[in-house]
Length: 540
Image (tube, rainbow, N blue to C red; front, top):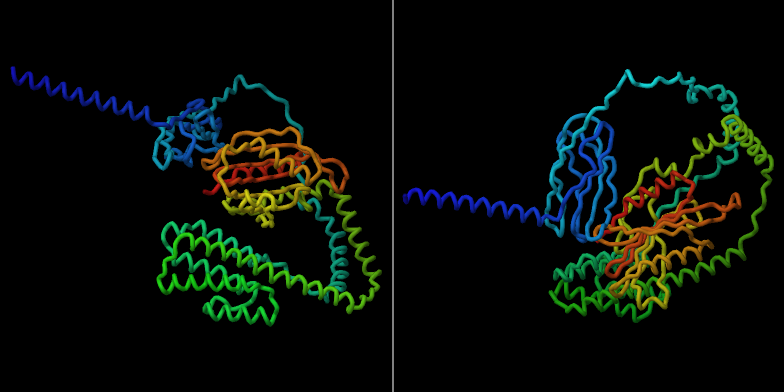
């Protein structure tokens, strides 16, 4: 009897353990904030499945690069942007397969606040398409299509084109044989811009928070010494503090650089403080370190202003002297050469356009600008502070943007990079604005209207059909805006329909925006714009 009771108690304990395990499993399943949805799991070959991953969180969510089946039979057609539905983030993928069978889409890893969560796996059935040869309708025989023209179809034109090109080549040779080809201009970054960018990068390293004072001062003094060596041509990197100060004083007196004594004294104090930290193990307080950093930035700006103000005055004097001294060049009579060039070019152009047609020439020889953009190599770069990573067909060029005097109490800095111009057929602009204080309750409607008004004043137009949607990028909430406007074409003098696309994000102390303008009728420009917008990524 006792044995029977003990067996029953043992069975009850096992059942209790099973019940607790089941409850914990259910509780874990309920706590999992990640789920999947799909419009179907059974498709025919080539059809698409809309696969969704839903997360019941809005911040610090990292969606996966989709992990496909082990046989690689399932393909990703498109990865769509993340949507926000109430308090849920939803990532959509379009899937397809071209091989019949059953395939398992494995569990997908989603990071939420640096914690790992897994979705359920998904079984997908791909069926073949049945072909009914008996019930299939009969269609009439199609007419013979003309084959596309190839190079062989135009070989006979070479008998006309080759002599003309030879004649043109001989004429150009005799005209330009004595001229030396100019080298392509090299990309030049002003030393002051390089120094200020390095200062911002130094701030972002947070060396003070890591108590790396010695490394901080080494980089701080290297920035100012490198600038002095590049912009003033004074050997600063290998000089001691006293040697450098003496050299600057000598140059200032002999060459009249225009650097104030106060600026030189500030430089001396900062370099001496850095020497104490590096060689005497001095440990200044945080306020002193921040003061030295501010002083270095003032030294860079004051020195650059003084030196280049002097250069501008000297340049004006040299220009005036050259105007007075240089005699007027004598005009050379090249009328015959120009007539021959014009005749040869005219024959080539008229003959080619007459045979091929203007449309063919433009598409295959001249080429559309946006068509070339799609075919060439693209570049992925980061721009601005804080930076925006973006893929573009051309490397964007930095623009100097001065903060207005009446906004210096609010705005700390503005960095801007662009390609093209607002009145051209395609324009890209990336701008980052840093504020002194946190942006609380930022009003997107007012911000968007302000940007559009500013652009409208610059190009002299009005925006219509303005639309905006929510867009989240790396956990930062923002807006994507599209608008239409008309702009006068310089060639045809007619109004062209244009389209503006803008991304606007505001978080913390920063506003970041990407602006793209294009011809509304240019399908290639639409593809280029879509690829650029999709590639935008906000860096922390």
